[in-house]
Length: 614
Image (tube, rainbow, N blue to C red; front, side):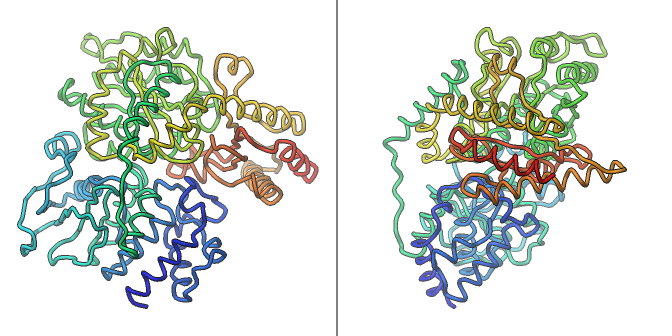
């Protein structure tokens, strides 16, 4: 079918699409094949297109496009598929971004690692946040920047040629000769990257991975608007009036929740926020600690996105190194930090620590007084000079209501920045936007972090701010109820299956303000060898999860998320949140998260059935 038929079909799809395409932030992993990722969704979608079937029933049966909406989702896939066919490209060669700049940065990163020359051509003005000097000095990217006349012929170049175009229309129907990458920047939606047909598949994969780790896909609402503009020529109007009102409400809510009075930042996702923090701190180190090595100290088994992103930042600079920080089980976080900081001090390097409290997935809380002492201890370099004090970057997504940074709180005397993934408790699973805030000792660092959040154009969208303005005021109450449900379920499991090992906070820690709604479950096992025992336990994990989903399909979900408004979420960290973690550091246990609204008695009943079966 031709372009006209495609548009007719897309129009019907938009009328009949499942509600979740626009609303969900995470998807069921039991209908998601990571190895096939985007291709499985589009293979099935193309079959429906060829059959001219856009019925609600057929669309509702399509497999999950991606595990996280920030990486991609049904509407981004449909948009990219449509633009690809209009331009004679494979769908994987079209990648949409919520950011106007990071498509360019993704190519520059790839070419830096490949030691390939790059020229960026533009006839329109580049996005205002594109700061060439910062990209060269801080990111290490190498490129030539040239302004050309509209429609001018582009001569061959020994390297990659990026053509940047700014248009109100999302469609692209002209891929100029001698251009390798075409970036169409839209004033409201973000950008769409078209990768030339002759580019290597590995190049496509590397650029796609930037979207997975450092930014997000074009949001569902913007993809919907873009598709409507493609098929019906409709225009997009942004509600500018409420933007500042919502921004003020969100900032005030974050300050109230954290008990900190510094200015927060809000990003398009938790990882977008983390990337701005990392690059902002790298920038600060380059300016204020010239010539010194930078050490990012990271737990090897923490959330896979954090682990992977940290190593990706380090891969781009010989001056940046990742130092492992053992924090779980037999390893105490405070002692590990003390030992690592001693080593970094002797090397006269710049120490940045990224850690989760409680830890993921073992839900452990270190001795906070010992942690404070380890962080604020004055150390000496090998030459006997005072070492650079660390910055503690705290991922407190599990417990965003716990006070760490305010005056008199445990980390108030140490340069500290906390951040939270917004797809969890802050929005209740309604958007991906995340936020960060610094204590007074680290407040000066926020200027650099804000610069890099802007440079990557990774700020929260207006709709994301609207969602947070509505959801943040009720967050602490939702956390309280979700914790109560989790505590009751944990106690029930402990009484019903005492041989299971449950990782959860103690009641004493809860009284101190640590009230997560996530716990991990190490089921009892059997076998003659360690291998047999491990295999049995892994099979038992999956058996429990499948039973829960089968018996309570309206509430139990195989999903990596938590902090949602309703239901119970199950996953195996080793195969989901720790996807890029080294095999020896992975946790093959069940991680369970309960929402404030859940049929707890039904879950208890099904768990009892599981225990009786084993």
